Image (cartoon, rainbow, N blue to C red; front, side):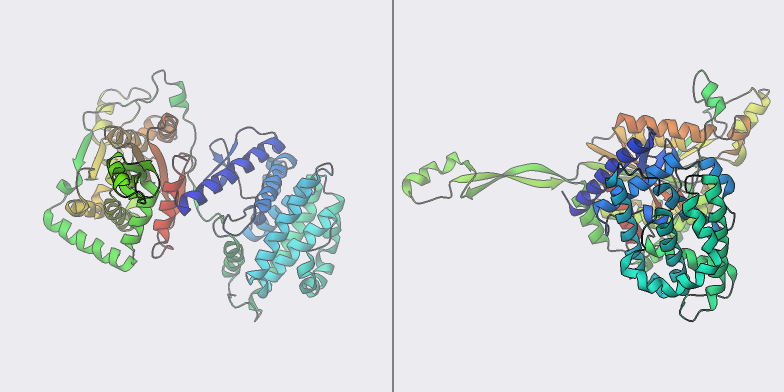
Length: 573
């Protein structure tokens, strides 16, 4: 097993243990982690506070136990509706208000559970020291935020501030005392009453937010800016630097239930398949145009500086499994080699009479990339084309079969299918009402070198229209299931929820994303195809059990490729 696989399995084991602890303490049965984020059913839960997100690379297991206990107490001791109603709108005030509510909930840990109290204290101490040692307290804003976190938690819990940094806080704490002293005293007094506690928390949040705005001109703060919005961005950059993996930088896909689909006796419907098409992508553009696209794509790949050989080695180590490949004779231990027994008679001192079975890694696997070619993905076309092109090349070097597929529609707003429905008198709830279009950029039988022009067709802007994700996932899975490889992986690349305006208008808003969840759930439960989602600036965890958000604009070099390899390592585990 590779180091990456071992690390991923360890992270999954920790996530399972933490989820079990949270369920036990909170009494909620439908809690689980998806992509390192806690979900209730299909809905992701808020982050709550920065110290609740330890890093598997830098934090110990006790930190994860403390974070799990903190989340469980937040779910059981806080009224989420009341909190949402009372929390302030400005981002900085809202962040401080959330943090104080978390401290209140953690102070409700029962004395009869000293292990929980110890875990909570340990986790906050580890977060505090990491924040300090990262250099965040060297700035005026960072030191102010750190001081507020320390003194508020100490007051709510009736404990001392962290001893290692106590001296550093004195000047800032002295300046804060006349401004928030009264509200600070109320935090401990009203910690059992969420509404009363919120009054004091709002007062502190407003005062501190104002002080953070005024701290922008401090000469110690090298990253300060003159505008209010820049001050707020710098504040949140402190938290992002502390734990950027868990910073809520990306939106979450909006997935809901469709009443039409729930009430439909026959489930998901398609009004007509007459205009559905499947195309080889290279046939949709002239050869001269594809040559230009290919040159543009090659320049982008060269600028990215990807180490393809290294990526291929990582993929081979991840996807290959040991397989028998004959025997190695002339060994000093192992199974007796009958062909060498005569040698024992001729030379009694000879010890190389054994043989060992030889195993070689064999990648009996097919990886399919399914690309959302809806209109919003047009802006990401070049970066996605670069991504799948490099992966197709690296997978081929690793002796892994790959396919690159896409899905869109043949026309905007339903096209001919919509017109047929109108001529039919607009019967209610017609189901999918568009011209489905599936694209093959690279088939499993086509070598990467021959598929290069076809992959570059992803840069053809007029391919990008609307998207029927559920049917596309079914189609890609059917292609995989028809292949002979033992292991089958499907990676869906998308930047949004399913979208087809005609279908949504004739049915309801969530008709297509409800169907997508059903399709993905069916294939995940069957277990024949391992499905993961790559969200381009969007968290797709409401649809997929395994997902990874990537930011192509911010990623450099091999970073985005490592993130996707990490997603592949989590599949099927």
